[in-house]
Image (cartoon, rainbow, N blue to C red; front, side, top):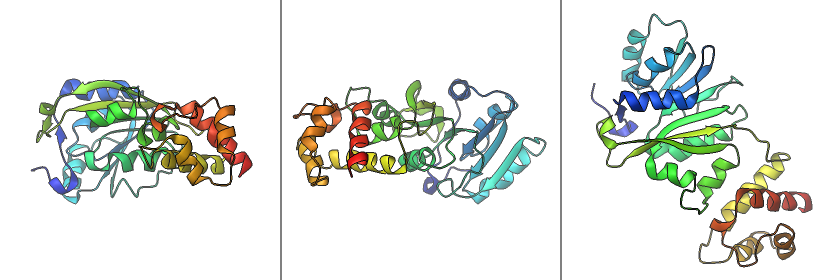
Length: 257
């Protein structure tokens, strides 16, 4: 079966990369693993070998009979035909492990990190530049990096060359691990919502100082005082403010708003 561009299919073929993904997921017998886009089952097979229960969500209807035939003898395999971006996980203790299409990376991260039933760990094979941006490897934060770090601990654990796929993408990839996923940084849903409002406003106009951006977004708050009490320099840029400072600042906003 030929990969389909409309589904962003780049089937993984590298055994070392597959092993790195499973190892990063720290998969053990009895774990429940949600796999997005199993394709022809290359990663699925390795996950099942750990004796975990694998729930695979595949959008491409043409792949369903292939997967059903391949894993028909596995009692710990559940196959669902559908869109992972609209799938609502009912399980409360699971790991998400997948080779996801590049074009839905951000949407996948948002959907599952913010879901009421978050995975406790995510291991996703993504574009290398995206993994580096999530981890802020250049020392500069972004909306993406802060949005992920607000819920878990990201780490780039393995680089995967473009030749590890069929067809080969035009860029290299990386295994991104996100551990300790929770909402522990937020006091409540209101605080969570204000955190994201502040972050998005802070990066809205990159040429402006963070204080200016946030003062415009929150006109009725003593923003300069909040900066001072949060130990954020008045001339700080959004990309130079760490997650703990963003959490502290948004906490003040949620208390005073």
